[in-house]
Image (cartoon, rainbow, N blue to C red):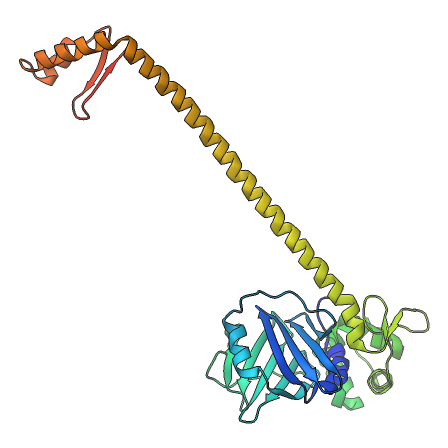
Length: 364
């Protein structure tokens, strides 16, 4: 399945999620832009609402892995959301933005899930004053940070509420070079569903503009998708039966279950691969440490052998070395180091005198 949840998918997912309204927040899990809300719904039991901004938003059958120690944002969310109840779940217009409103006896909070661009998770007071966000951001037109009012991105046209003329004008004045691009970008359908809509409407996706008749066909095809009960069928790795007369797929009793069947196994597989990768990295690191230690041991052994041989030579030549030191001590009383060095030039045994470091280098 494509990695981004489209506006059309959100429409059906949120429609199915309305049974969560009234459900109590039992647990909150968070890791960066991943969020899991464990909700208890009367007569429905435990439900797991999973968010991975900007990619996924659906009810999952399997709890993803989260850090055992909660981070700061996790603790923050738990402080305000634990034991609250879901008051509302809604999509903003026909965009990839979701609002979840929570209420307790004293307060209410609004969580905004931005499922576009790089994604974000924001918790606000009931008046949309931002309390905290996964990421603080600053654009020329709006800012996301604690203490200020949340501002929605500039809203695009809502195809759910458009007339035939508005749809025609939106496509023809979009500045895009094809109908499918106008639907995908300007009307938030995305390329996959834009093409499917035009296929069902019988309109050439590559043409630049449409007439009244074609606008009517497109709007009718879209209304058929929205108003008629759609089967949740996994076809071409999407939860809709593309061109259903030609393509068969596995059918589910909800879009959430259809997406869960595609996404969750991929998340589990990705986690397994990450675990193997992390394990492999640890092994490589251990091997590197062992390699360095083996090199150090070899160097230490070489140094030991060298020093041992040096000691043996010194022991063998002890009398000779002692006489040299004695002679130097005697002549030092009469001459300066400069004079001694001059006299010892070309000496067979004494090769260097370094009075500064108190060293005498001899060759035995």
